[in-house]
Image 1: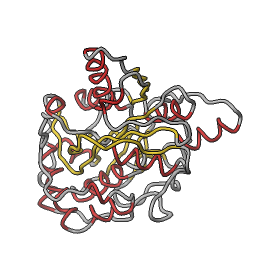
Image 2: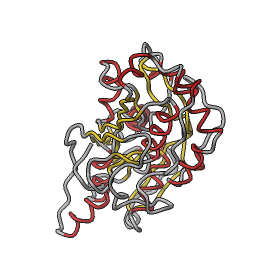
Image 3: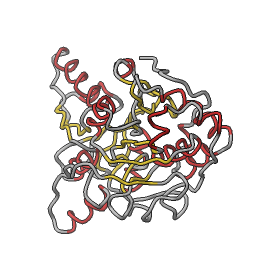
Image 4: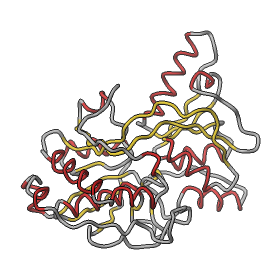
Length: 320
């Protein structure tokens, strides 16, 4: 969803010339990736994977029983078109070639497609454009760190595959300290548009005002890169992001950022699927296969995300 560099590489380059600017979307960028081969390009310049490969090499074989559950429309075209917001490393982000989408969600999508006997085409899209794209038939599945919640379940079905919460981070030097949402009153927070973090920060702002305290200044960006750069440039005091993304950003900042406060709101990630497509059952069946054969754990290990592994995937498992 961006130009060719990762957010941290961009921030470093801009800091070197004593100027920082936000990153905007460059529109959809597609990366056709066969489920039987590794994606092109090397690891991102900000990659902290456990090997030098851009993606996990775990690609399972097709499963006849699962393939039989794939809807005819998808089976006939032979491709699963998957939308991802490639600004959310290590879950989904651009490889060093600037257009191939890599990360945990990309690898998992390719593995699931392989089990279903088809290929995966991972397409970059702004986060708030994915669900409308699913509704219009532009995409078959959204694999972009979606928190499965009751509100989103009204629009799409989710196949739950991971567990994550929300974390805070700030500049390591001269940053601000918070324990949780209640401490955000009077602070400036950077978030990505249409995320649960935007909802939480905005809701907390209302609570602050009701309590007679200063509101939260919520800076909203079309992608996570912009939120990260807002803090590095001093425009915001804090960033809110999903816990694996926050941890990765801090690690890749090499001392520029630090985690603050407590992670909250642990909830399932879900692969978003149109309610009318019938694909959710095939995806769930494929997920159970890759969990059983070790592919799932191999992918999470490759990206340093084993702490979010689950053992009982389900459809629409939101609790709130």
